[in-house]
Length: 306
Image (cartoon, rainbow, N blue to C red; front, side, top):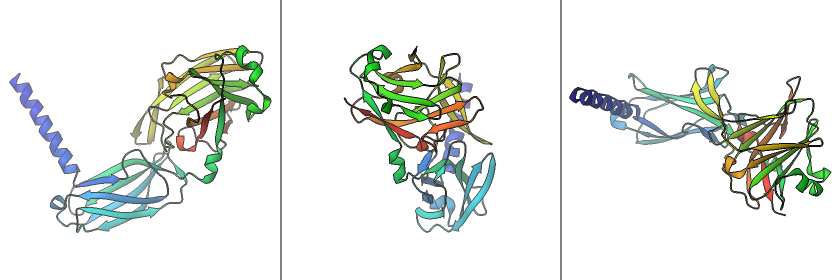
C-alpha cells in the first residue's frame, strides 16, 4: 500500500511539474475550440518572465487542412512585461472549421520550452445570414397529422430540391413534415440548441437522418477529437423518443423538446439545417451554403406563437 502511495505521489508531482513548465506562456485568446468572429488572428498571452528570462519568443500560425500543415505567419518578440497582445495575421477566410482548423505554435529561443494552442476556427456572420431563418408555427392540437392537416397551407412548405418541408410546434414537441421525399436517399436534420454559431460541431449538436425508402430514422450526436489528419467526429447513438408517421404522401416526424434540450416558447430560436441527399449522392442544403460539420453556417428555426 505504501509503495503504491509513493508511486502515485511521483506521478502527481511529475504531472504538476509538466503543467507548470507548459504554462510559461498562457493563451487567453484564442483558446481551444474558439470560433473567431473575423479573420484577425490576435493573440493575448500571459508570460512567466522568470521562466522565459528575456529570451525571444516565437509565434507561428498554421492551418491544418486535409491533414496538411501550412504556415501562414511568424512573429518574434522579447517580452518586456508579463502580458502581451499582438496581431499575427489577417486572413481572408469567412468560414474555417469543420474538420480543418487553425493552430498557433510558440517556442522560446535557445530552450526546449515550447507548446501550441489548437483548434480554433473562423465564422464571419454577414447581414445576409439573418435571412437564413424559417418560421415554425405553433399548433394547439397534439402532434398528429390528422389533427394539424387542416391548418397547413402550401406556402408553409419550403422546397429543398424535390423535397418540401414544413415546421410546427406545441409545448411538448417539434414537428417536421416532409413531402415528395420518394426517390431521395436520405434527409439530414441538424439541430444546434445553444445556437452558438460555432466553427466545430460539439456534444450538444444533434443529427436526425430519415431514410424514405425503408421509412426509418437514425439519430446521432458527435464526439470530437484532434488527430494528425484534422478533427475526427465520432458518431454516437442519440437515445431519444422520436416518432414518425406517414399519411398520404407526407411524413410527420415528432421530436420531444427534452430530447433536444430546448425549452419551447414564443420567439425561441435555435440553429437548424436540412440536407437532402439524392440517390446520385448529390446534396442540397437549407440554407444553400450550409456545411454539415460547421454549425455557424446553419440557419435558424424560430418558434412563432399562434
